[in-house]
Amino acid sequence: TGERLDHVLGCLRFVSQANNLNIVLITDEVAAWMLRGKLTRQFAIPKYHALSWFGLPEAGPCSLSGVKWPFRNRKLRADGFHSLSNEPTSEKISLSQSAGKSVLVISLKPQK
Image (cartoon, rainbow, N blue to C red):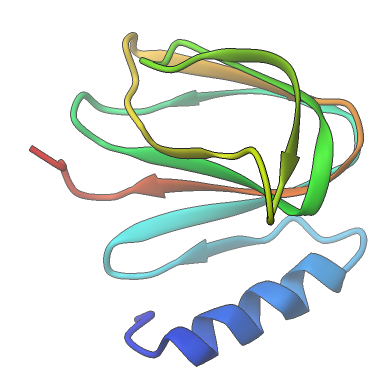
């Protein structure tokens, strides 16, 4: 359920190291996708659901559109630039990642 932060962090560390697996983590509050390597994806996100995207530890260059705070060709870093509590502005968001590992987190419940 994600009630223990130490378990959540341990799980994120484990799945970030797993290769050749498509892993989605689901708690009572969020769904999280582990993203690896070069990719382009679209996600349908309902209105008022938040999303955050972090390097794990680093990914990029990355781009994100269809959100309140879009960006292009930025390096996502666990200890630097990331997209926190962003908001969709359309029915679908688009993202691209050139290299590295990242995690995309989408809330399962409206935030407003």
